[in-house]
Amino acid sequence: MLAEVWNAAIAVFARTRWSRIGLVLSACIIGVSLAILWRRLHHLDIHHVMTALEKKPPHEIVLAALAIAASYATLTFYDWFALRTIGARHVPYRVAALASFTGYSIGHNIGATVFTGGAIRYRIYSFYGLRVLDIAKLCFVTGLTFWLGNLTVLGLGLAYVPAAASAVDHLPAAANRTVGIAALCVILSYVIYVWRQPRIVGAARWQVTLPNGPLTLVQILIGVTDLFFCSVAISLLIPAQPPIDFVALSVIFVFATLFGFASHAPGSLGVFDAAMLVGLHQFNREELVAGLLLFRLLYFIIPFTLALAAVGARELWLATTRAQPVARPQERP
Image (cartoon, rainbow, N blue to C red; front, side, top):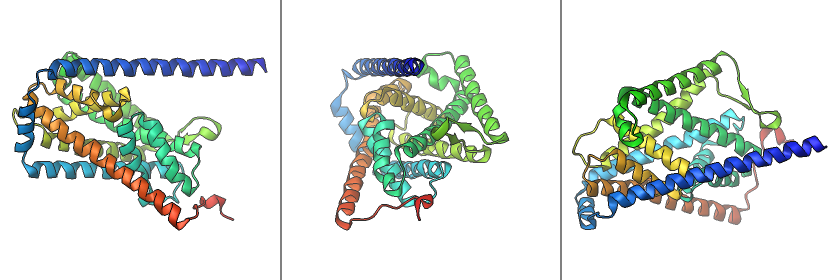
């Protein structure tokens, strides 16, 4: 009994300690980002920004909006793939699409995506018999897809154009290339690891069977496709001059996304923008800010509004129709 209490105390202490470390890290990222924004924007010409917004060709904004819509459509396959991985094949794609879109849109804007997005998913998927444990497994698989995609793009980008990240991480090009090759080696090692035989992580009820080799390649493709459409959108919104290599832009975008993710700031506000301003320092500052404002409108604000409307409409439908929950196949008589 004493040993069990001792182990529980150690576990609580470890969780508390790591959560504090994460909180301090988030605060540091946000603090540094705010300092960068102040340095780069305190003499910003607002009139010039508004002029840049007015001069932005409408067709480029429309194309960027379509690319972002394609990115959110790709995000639906994060949940679709994860549901099949954890054995919840009875959940229709339309439900996975709704949970994914609302979970990511609301989670991205509120912050702490794992918890806020997880709560939205539980509200939707519990109607189909999924429990908290199932949502935790689903979030694990979707998170794995996210990291596989990001590490693949980052690894390829750093290996191909290592100097692109130097403006953000201030490392020599050779060091960035080494990091990129190391990331690709990690991805390759993981694919080989799951290709040979079924791999299980976790213990007891928390076990998750990792996707096999071919399915892992599908995971990577989903993640890379999502980032590709986002990079296309940002390339259409930033200034056209001076020209920038698309792969280099993708690397900077991934860096900015990961910094925003690590900060847990609502909508990555300030953190994503600071990283983009640092990484794309060669562009006119006011025109770049105008492009980032348009991206924030298209990628964060509009989807957030639509997601709130979708969640509200679903709750209203449940209240008025008195729809009955759908039992999982193994739970039916």
